[in-house]
Length: 285
Image (cartoon, rainbow, N blue to C red; front, side, top):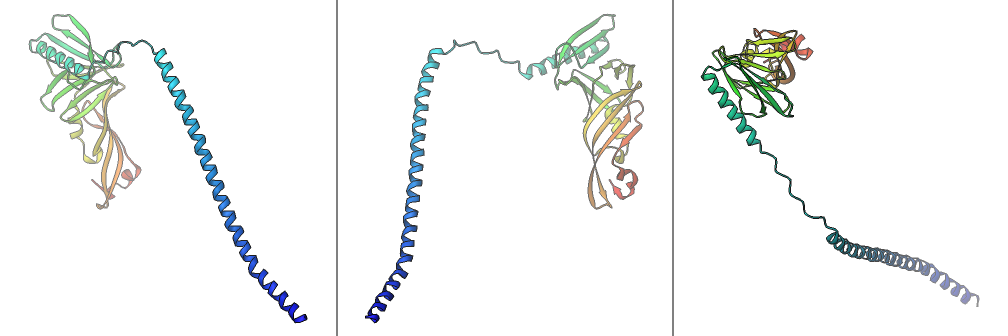
């Protein structure tokens, strides 16, 4: 009896030993299935909710469309289109032709182009004639030259007005701007600027000013060139970058600002990095 009892107890323990892992595995499987069902229910619930919202939005949008149709304002006239830029260019070309004709006929004593006027983005042209009369008119900002000056040494200078309230002078591919009114004498074909300190003659034109200085004193690439005045003296301030080579091998780019006297073309100052000033012998152009 005892042997049989021990055997039965042993069999029971063995069964429990294998049954426990099976139960754990079943619980895990059931738990996984339950979690997936909950997730699916949640997703479906959200989907249904979204469909309901979309349906409401659709109905609301239809109602809104109906309301908009009922409350639609009366059509208004379309705004008139702005004048194209070509109109300003054409006007500048016409003014150029008028001035040139009057100069050829010997009727013009002096021309003054002021970059500002009462109208924003416009300039003012004043012509003093040989008979003592004068005329003044508003001129457009454009890239078309209003008047040309033919210099025997540095070639043609074309002058126009910019929208930013400056006058542009283009001379042999060199462009400079100035905020001062520019005065042209048709007889002598000379240029001056009207500054607060008085009228200052420009005896050295832009291309002359740049060609008259060495490569180490001017930018390789010009970013801006301004015709200014200080203490009654006109000058060109040319800013840009200069390309050098350290020991003739390593490329180096530095910012350079050169100030040139507009009277005689001499250099007033050169602003460049300290290493180009102290160790210039190590940097070749």
